[in-house]
Length: 490
Ligand SMILES: [Zn+2]
Image 1 (spheres, rainbow, N blue to C red):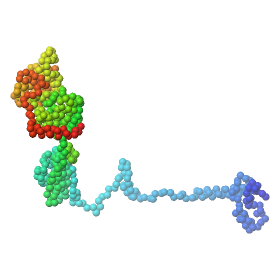
Image 2 (image 1 turned 30 degrees about the vertical axis):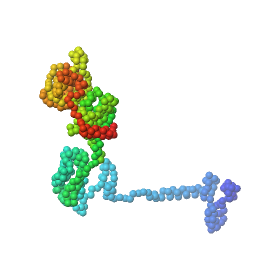
Image 3 (image 1 turned 180 degrees about the horizontal axis):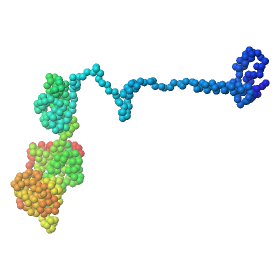
Image 4 (image 1 turned 180 degrees about the vertical axis):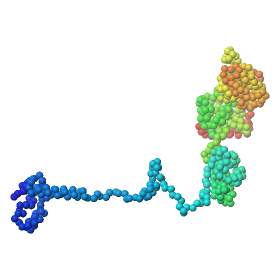
């Protein structure tokens, strides 16, 4: 009997042996068992349940399926779960400990550490140990060097010894506020006494540094150290531009030097009339440059103005610090051209229409416009012969300079001198105002020579100006060419 599988697979694969239940009939039990065991090994356990439904073969397939399903279900539900990552059990005390030393957000209330009380092994010290050496840096303040050292903890004895030795080297009072002081204090026996001064270093003045050291026998050794200084003066030149003062200040010169420059120039010319925008100023000042980098500007040494026409060269010379022309003639002679600092001549000498009186008349002086309160300077040294109210002149001062020369300063806001008083050239005698017949704050300035009003600009000399001569003049000229040879730093 051919099975369905035989026919289906005929010609494609050798026919698989088949268990034939019908052949079991008629055989004895042993034989059948043997045969069935042999044939079972060859049995086809993969049965297509879509074929020969209801046949013995089909039933056997169904039974196999049922048995396998039942076995799978039975095994699937009874298998134990596989072990995963399970944290080892931790006692509560250990957990609290790890929480205390763990890092958690403090904001959430986590303790950052656990406090440990001292154990019986901890012993209390009689006193805290001190550092054997203390290095300090202090700054000299309003209390001077002594105050700074005392504040740093230097003892009275050390201070006295230090200042006694310092007296021959530098003036401790001359130490500038803000100066840095390096202090090293040593070991002391008890806390009741100040630490001994081991080392001290500070700059006593521009050219000296002072070092104090504790010697082998405990004495203080104070030693001055000279700082190298370059004394080459500073030569500054530049274009006048809109304002001589402002341009000179912008070139880095201090206000005091610029003021002095304008003052000395004022003896030589009318600073606000005779100085052009394109002129060049030439200023030489004393200057010190320390090797440590600090600089210090001194006083004006040379005042020059290059205007291409009549260049001005003035140099300081002599004990009095007067300025002289390159010819050796003193510049401070006669009258100052501008008796008001920073003023501009607004009206000249001669016939003019009087703004208050309303008709033309002789203007016997020159007017300088300046704000109320600007100081008025004596244009030369002399004696006050009148100081008070002068009618149309308002508050007026008259100076007698001798040799028949008098000057009058009118419309003053305030008078600063008294009748009979002696005044020096450039000294303030009052303030610019608008008293008397005046339309606004200005100085009306007159010069009288032997009873006649003269144009102040025409008065060049009266009395003899100091004149250098001989060897002094030669030295003066040598010094001037030396100064002018300094390279300009504009
Ligand atoms: Zn006037």
